Image 1 (tube, rainbow, N blue to C red):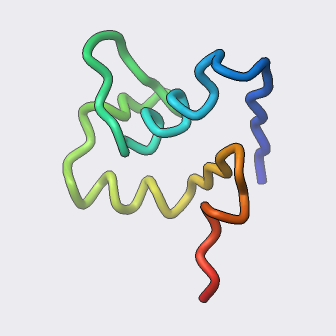
Image 2 (cartoon, rainbow, N blue to C red):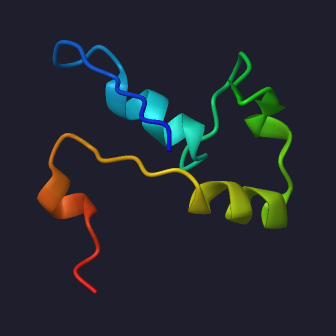
Length: 68
């Protein structure tokens, strides 16, 4: 298991980076690589499988966790 942490001041882009990583938003420029894989080129099925291995906890964890 690997753990990566993004920390910084409010407004520095932590949530935007997390949302871009799992493609909740698509960046207008640049590249995103994770484990040498181009995240922005993943097709729907590949992206779905990729998201199973990633967990992003946003600044308010209670609103981002699924209560199931």
